[in-house]
Structures are given as C-alpha cells and as structure tokens.
Length: 208
Length: 208
DNA sequence: TGTACATCAGTGAACGCGCGTTCACTGATGTAC
DNA sequence: TGTACATCAGTGAACGCGCGTTCACTGATGTAC
Image (cartoon, rainbow over all chains, first blue to last red; front, side):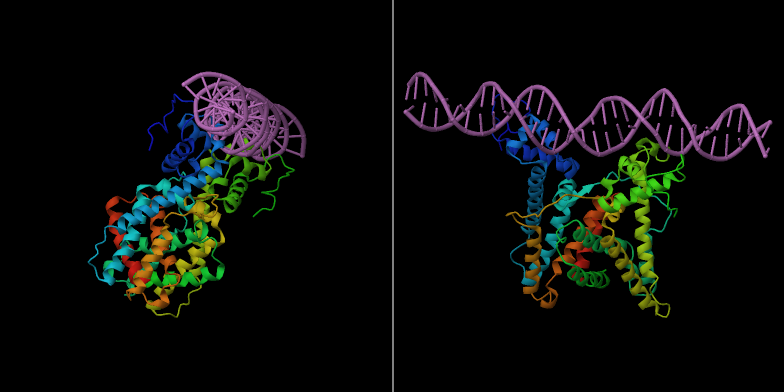
C-alpha cells in the first residue's frame, strides 16, 4: 500500500498506480454512498487527476463500478471467513457444522451492518433517500403482525416467541424477494422459484 | 379513472386532475425503473404538461417520490389482502392461522415478483445495472454451500433437503440485513438487532 | 556512459445530456354583482 | 341573464449542476543504439 497513491498532490508526472488509486477511491465512495456514488469524476477528483485520466485504466464508469463491486464481494467473503476462523478444531462433526452455518450468517450480517454501502454495492442494491413511511392505508407489517397474533391465539406459536417474530418471518420472505429481483437468483427460472417459495414458508413456519 | 388524465394532448387549458395524473405517471415510472426513475421531468413529459407545472401539486421531486412510495406500499398490502381473502371460513383456528401466515408470505412474494419496480420503490431499494459477477475470490455463496455440505455430511441436514437449501438460509439472512440497512428496521437499536440475529439463525437451523 | 527517440499516461478544454428548480407571465375558469 | 373581475393552474424560458465521454495535446519515462 503505497502512501502516495491517493494523495491529491503528486510530484511526479506519472501517477504510479492510478488504476489501484481509482479503485480505492471508488471503494471509498461505495462505502459512503453505495453504488450510485461510484462516479468517475469524483473518483478522479479524489485521486487528484483529470477526469478523463480514468479512461487509461477503466473502459467506462460501469467498468469501474464493476471492479468496486467485485472488491466489495470479496470483502463480504472475507468477513465470513474471519468468523469461520474462530471455530475450534476439537468439535464433533455435528457441533462443527452447526457452528459453521452460524458463523456464515454472523459474518454476512456483520459485514452488512458494518459496511452497508459496500454491502449494497456488492449485491446490487442502492440507497434510497427514504423518509419515515407514515401513512394510513393497510400496512404489510401490520398484516403480518395480525397473522402472527392469530397463530399465537391458536396456540401454534408459543407466547414467549411472539415478540419480534415479525422480523424473523419478514426477513426470510424479504430476503428471497431481494435475491430473486436484484440479486444472484435473477437467472433462476420460474419453476425453480416456484418450488422454493413453499419450502421457504415451511422453514419459517417450522423454525419461528 | 378518467381516461383523459394521462393523455398528452388536452383540449382544455386546465388539466382537471394533474396531481393524480402526475402520481399515476410516477407510479408507472417506478413500475418500470424503480425509485430512481421517478423524475419530475419525465412525469410531466408523460402527462403532456410543462416541467414546472408539477410544482402546483408537489413541493419537490422528493415529494412526488414519497407519494409514489406510499402508493406502492398500499399495493403490497392489497396483494397480501387478496391472498388472505382466498382463505375459507370453515377452518379450525389452527388451520386458519397457518393459512393466514402462508397467505401473507405468498401475497408479499407475488407482489415482489409481479411488480419489482414498485416493490423496490416501496422498500427503499433501487435497481443497479449489475452484470454477471464472475470473479475468482472466495464467494459468499460457495462458503454457505460448503457449510451446508458439512451439515449434510454430519447428518444434521437430510440429504433430500440439501439441494436448494442455500436459497432458504441466504434469504433469511439477506432479508434481515436489508430490513435493517434500508428498510423499516433502520430505527431499531443495536441491542434489539443483536437479540434478533441469533433467533433468526436458530430459525434457519431448525426450519431448513 | 551518453544521446536520440518512441511510447503512452495524464492534461486541458469542450460537448451534450437530463435533471431540479426559479421567474415573470397569461389566460380559462368561476364568482360577485 | 349578462358582465367585470380576481384567482391560480399551467406556460415558456432560463439557470446551474454533475455527470460520462471525446478530442488533440504534451512531456516524463525508459529503451535502443
């Protein structure tokens, strides 16, 4: 990591490693503002270089964004691996497998919460400037809450598990939707998705 | 639904119900291109009106987007209610509760798949122009797959349930991440989220 | 070791784009008399 | 029923913004001799 790569003021005419510097600037932009903030002009500005200099190293703005996306994806994987590395070797196969799955999820979520901009960049989602969603129509959240209340009343859902159960069910469903729409499951065909949905809902029902 | 509200060519000087027409144009834009496509200029263009005419009805572009967002949220709720309405009345409380929860999820997912642009608009996510993510570093998907393989090998996960199990686990985890980062759980404090994560992972483990 | 020279990374200026937003305006509408 | 008039919804022109991208260029670098 050369300390001159991101400096706005250079003494040399040639930059040295402009591609890397632009990529790092792009990553920093993604960290702060998500994929929409990854802009050739801002990346070159931060690197102290003319806007068009970027074209020596990236074919287009899309090309830079793609490189940033790739770096973000690796960072997610690294976060998961770090969590996996904390698992001891003296566990039974069963305990080890459980711990691994839990570590995968923990690492993934930790990265999402620590680096939301990179997370969105990695998975193709962009920050929207949303305000508070107060409105008076029927609310998906309330409908879900009512269904869960019904399950509690029917004795299927133990009362102790009711508080917060919305978040669990909603997470599973919302997640599949996102993966299918914006994420890596875009290429999956309709039949496969159709087969997946009942399984997902069954998982929620059994596991909540 | 007046048939003249979205017509580009009017005979009257006054529009009639420009606010509604702009909102409908905005919804159509969101349907097609997500929240980022909801633009005052395009909405007025489609309504056959000068760009600044929008300011008689919306304080800003954000204001229009907010109105579209609200409409999209209602549409999600309607999709869920439509599914709920298909449940018979002759069910036991237990069966009825189960059916309701399933209907909630089905309606939500159906809307997401049918109207991805509106879904993203409703929940604060934007379409990114992502290409195929081919790269050579460690891949979150592969790490998850390996952990699941391990669970299968250990005999925790029955072999018949292994195929596609990635999607179930990933959905749950990805969904909570999205809700926390971009969605309605933004306001939730750290302790609450910390308490939620183990519960979510437990749900996956038990329910997969 | 010294010198001529080709390379090509970065420059400077400019382009067109669509966007949000502001300004002074105009003329159809509907009301008051 | 007819007429004067105030209202205010929509107009037309213009602004500044940041963006991606193209063009002809220049001059430091490293190589061939």
